[in-house]
Length: 313
Image 1 (cartoon, rainbow, N blue to C red):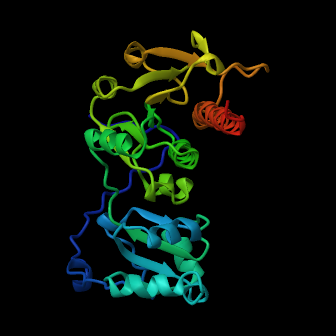
Image 2 (image 1 turned 180 degrees about the vertical axis):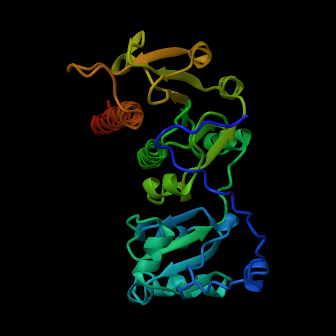
């Protein structure tokens, strides 16, 4: 049978047999190529995991140097090291085993991730919390009518730092914070507190409700601040031992914490803003406590002075 060819079709090309050509020797056994990376400066030494919690800024570090906290290492610019406010304290810290490093401002910026370090950074030992029982005992020993602030679920370190600063400045005897779902004493909190932690004891508790019951057993009256509390702040008599509870930024006091309070109080607001920042609410409530006590002192002093001026008989 003769195969017919289509008109105009090209003749079939004969198939070529591919010869097995061996690749060159250098392709079969490629030599390892060493890539030389460009020279780069070594990264700056970073603190280890234990050294990750830093405080920075002149006032916080100065307060830490004047206090009792153990400082492991200090990075400082040369100009500040020989400043009259720091020189003797840094010399004493070095004698106590603190490592003092003179560094550039750029190095401090690297350590603090660009924060406002003001020329000095310190790595302190982890913050030591006190036991709640010890806090109550210390508060009772310092004054017959102590005030302890309780922070319920504060998650913002700047808010907690501001609360600590106000609590110590007003003259309260301590702070209680929960261990779960709340920020602890971190470097950011220390920075905002601006040295107040050197003078204000803080207890960190596992169960906040149980801690409130322990405060009640010690004679404290527990007042919880809310945006719509049942009683206005200025109508409360804050005499005696006071435990003042401030809620978290978004949710306020938890239902369990509300049940543990002797009274729920609110700060009357005249504007259209429905609530206040947690640190601002704490400051206003603390000020009202000490305003009442200061007014009572002035009244008693005026009564005693007028009595002493009366003529006998």
